[in-house]
Image: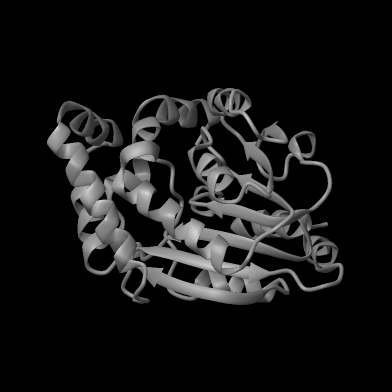
Length: 258
């Protein structure tokens, strides 16, 4: 998907969903919980940061972190630059030399990004190269090809992952997998199937029209977050935490593509 198409989504459907959609809210809350579980510190990079809604929540919860964003969408990157408290905002796709952030990061968050990239192995290697030795990668992806709906097409997905697939890929490139879980069965799965009957824009308009819809979204987000306490291979959303070992694993992984 071209960056202009992502800009359209961020200016409309995703702009609303990232602040009030139950899928976004519960995913962000789960990421915050995982960050807390692993006692994160130092420099944090979010890859595919959108308009910065997750980074704002990270900043509030972990004020000790130094935050950097990488975002391919032009309008979203402009919105990020207006956010206070970010150390740097880089505009461009992952792997583009001109967009590469300086230095290395103790924490990298890449949430709902890899499924948009044709060559996800190369993308993972880029993430590994950006991580400091001992750095942590927090990755989330949609799961299960059998749950594919028109929404996947509308937002530019090229795949949904199968259970264990992303963790295996991480291990193949030398990462130590600390956490590999799928969540979402049965509540979030049902919600996603219902979303698939509407376009992202239609779903966003529905939320804007009604106070009741916004309240229902908050209730659903709380239910989905509770659901992330239970690992289910039948779930539609996957969460992986992986550590880069002490040593130059990133450069070794990169040599595969040279």
